[in-house]
Length: 372
Image 1 (spheres, rainbow, N blue to C red):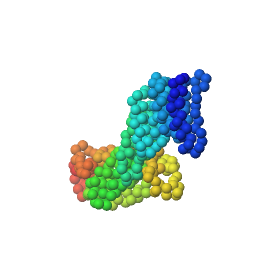
Image 2: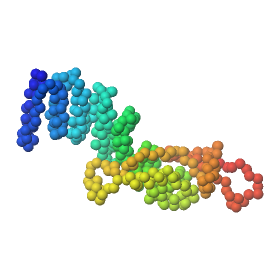
Image 3: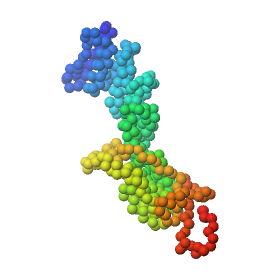
Image 4: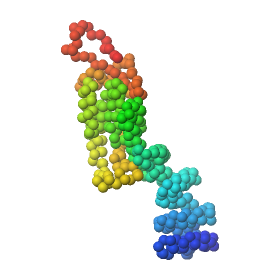
């Protein structure tokens, strides 16, 4: 107990200084009573200081515990609370130090039952520093990496759903950044650069809530490069995979103008779109105004569930009018069909046989179907 008295005496000056700088209220001093364990007393005192926002005092107490009782049963908890104190303190310096302390905790206690919580907090130190889509993406990329690491390492953690949603929030910011740059490149008529950016947004972030816009920009860029079948594939994906999008009618009109088939709506995509509309959080007018002035990115539009990705570079477009869906076998490219690869996007073109009325040689024996 003498060791504890020494530790408490060392902490008294800082404790009492807090009363003079904290509004005149006398800080509570915990003293040992009965058979209480001294390391436990120090640990509980640090928690009270942490609750009251006295982060420096809490860390001093915890450091005293670690130095005085190196074999304490509270050693693991003390290391985690030190990291938590920096996390709760916040600010750039606090979050940087918190990440270092959480990683230190994971190194010293790799099998701890709090390992998943520590990894979650590591990801959140970057998530809380994310900037808007048109700003530096360093913190967003770091957050994405750490959330992915969490989901891979702790698939059964009770924090899994929260981590998955935070990952979708983070990817919403990254994907929107790519889309904004792609739109800028379209204005500059740098179509290859726009294709590259929209391809990244679609390929890497399948849960992007504005994927329909990315598909539209990609289709326009390909059309500008005279890659009509390729463009038609992505216009068609708006119709089939985003049936409630305001761009559906524009995409249908594009397909008609290009004399390309209009695909059927994917019923699973329709069900997902309807669920998204029902689960989309309502953002008030004041909330939208506040978002304009906030330094933090607005992730309220991020999806609440995951969805399959769109296959890129494997487009199969039929140039003639589409037959009923029951003739699905004819939609498969025949062997030997050639592939046209341009601007990083491949397309296999399959010509359907023309109708007898449009074929002046209808009385001649039918030859093998021509493939371009």
